[in-house]
Length: 81
Image 1 (cartoon, rainbow, N blue to C red):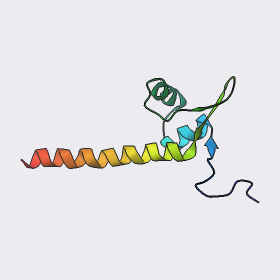
Image 2: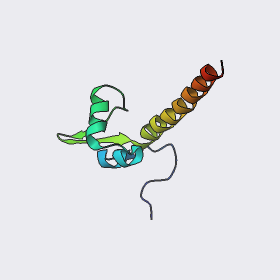
Image 3: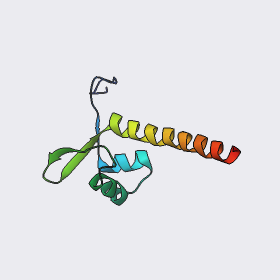
Image 4: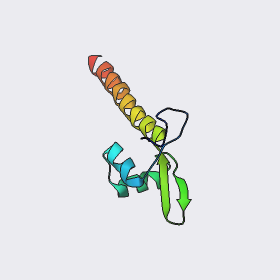
């Protein structure tokens, strides 16, 4: 039995390791992005424990994919000129 309902109304927290897996990035790269403000803000759970809202990480990934499409469209337009 799943203890957390599978819907968007319940935020699901994931570990740094899970965030790294979802993004295909290393933990050190994620920490660098976090320090630069380029990654979703972590939820502080304890003195040495943080987690991320899964939906925010997935949205960040979607935005990166979308930006790739926009960049490709722009580069094609400039090449066609």
